[in-house]
Length: 515
Image (cartoon, rainbow, N blue to C red; front, side):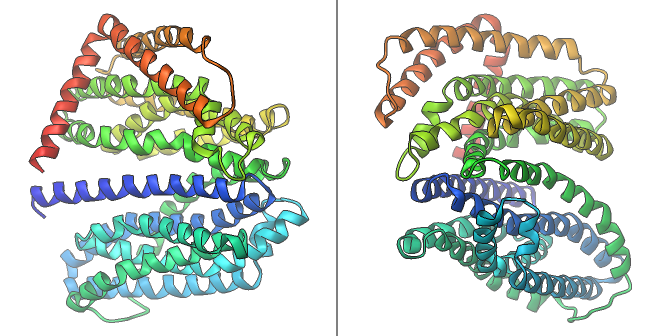
């Protein structure tokens, strides 16, 4: 692929990815409005987790392995052998998918028992998982299609599968909630998986016809490929542990708390979806190029500039979501069956998810920078430590704080992970001064705290209430007054970071105009 084709593909993937995540957030809003935070939505969240986790693990393993394996086999033994290897992988993965789907459809009580939800919610979740079981197989085949299409430089179809999946769920809820209840959402999951396969199947068939090779169950390199897949599979499963333990612990609480935690998590992740990935897209390649060229001073300077830009975005967002969790939850979810109590159950964990936004932004930059330096071992160590710490803190905070305690544990682990990865990056790149970085982030944080104090002055004069109008008015006033104060304070305390942000915005606009 040419540089222009790579840039075009990256733009398409970013666009579809953002739209998919926004549609996923809309899905959560609709689910909250139609079903509320109840035992039924608890059951749905856990059943969907089983399906999505299987698909996510398989997608990660396949896309991580199949591209380099195919390229190496084609280089050594030709395209025909490479395609035969892909077909062998496809055949065995397909057999496993069919077998696992059959087991779940016949015995959904098995995986649901892992969540320890109690008999009522477990019975509902088992019925829902039986309806969703075909989605596991279909999403698995979609993951196979995604990996094979990406091998051959086809990115648009794979990037749009999330849109198809979320659209299927929305169609199921809108069309069947009145007659089928929560089961309509389960049928929507299966419909979304069907749409994923239908979206990619025509393009996959075209590639398969021209690719060569033949359907096979064996290949000389199949066994070595399986061996390579084992550590990748372990890493993918490790990434899912905290999501599982959150649902496990939340399922031990009063009915509806698990769903409330899921809704809050979706809302807390929205800034990463809408802002972090687009901001980092033009910044990360520069860091990766400096790392590859061994330019450590330039790497440290580029990282520092990127961290400053991310802080200007993340710190005010963290503060706003932390202090305005109730108002934000009211605006996003406060309709239909999600009443005042439902909003309060969402707002309590949302406060801590808001606190974690800053750490998530900087942590993602650190993670990507270590990846560019081929420091996967350090990333794994930091991940293991944060997973263990999160589970330990879950047990400490769950009793007194309930679902908010799980969010607090996650927030603490995010910052611990950020500190660990920061130390690893500094050890690899000593030119990156931790004192300078702390000073930079501290100045932006002081500007954010000052802006908060200014923004709270008019809030005390506003009428209290739990309506959509009062929540919207609160958010508008705080954002406008606080935003103006934050920019003014950054001109005094962080002028270099503010100038870098303006330059990046101008460059991003220029790229879009050129595109």
